[in-house]
Amino acid sequence: MSAPAPGTLYIVATPIGNLEDLTHRAARVLGEVDVVACEDTRHSRKLLDHYGIHRPLVSYYRENEAARGEELLRRLQAGDNVALVSDAGTPLLSDPGARLVARAVGAGIRVVPLPGASAPLAALMACGIWGEAGEPVAFLGFPPARAGARRTWLEGWRGFPGALVLFESPHRLVASLAVLAEVLGPERPLVVARELTKLHEEFLRGPAASLAARFEQRAQASPLRGEFTLVVGPAPAAAPAAAPQPPPPAMTRAQLKQWARAQGWSRSEAYRRWQQLRGTIKD
Image (cartoon, rainbow, N blue to C red; front, top):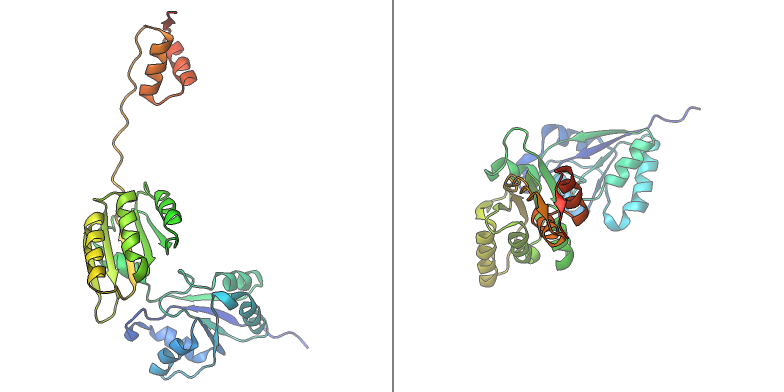
């Protein structure tokens, strides 16, 4: 008896706040698969109930990702169709699922993406500080929780020529905005999108330092709530490098050292370049 044909793993985007944002295709697939893997079964059950979908749910989150992934892989190999969803938005973007997708691909199982709601894309669409043709964008997920690691992490993106998109939690937002303004520049264009697609959706735009101060004031008045997506505008273009200053035809060793420092070269590099100009050193 031949082995059953493997099933299909569907990666399904779900609404990030507005339940009307589930696509017709996603609703159909969720109603047809053998099982839906989700971060929180209670949360996803509300979505499925809203659409009259009655399919089995199993939890799939960071802490059980390895064990539950093996179980789902066996079901896929046995012929079951599986849908993977996150609590909100597109799976794998700061949510579990990458391991399962990699294992499925490695096992020759068909993986089908069902695009839909996405907080990073929604924020980019309305930010107003990115979108020129060919301009790059990087999605960074959540910054590190520790202050020192967060600063180092942001420093690595200081010169990125496109937009940066990241998430932040309400209780760390004020601290992250402060270090963002310090590391990336107080005048760096910034958009903070809050509660995307929900009733109280808002976009706050302005220089990084201004928004950092604004949210600090908000937090002092009452605890910040909601889900935040940040879009940082591209880094300003670097000024063209100044042409190297030509050396005098003859220099003392002290003058050579001073000339090397002015050009940002090592002394050996300065000496090599100076020799090419056929100068002479005076003792």
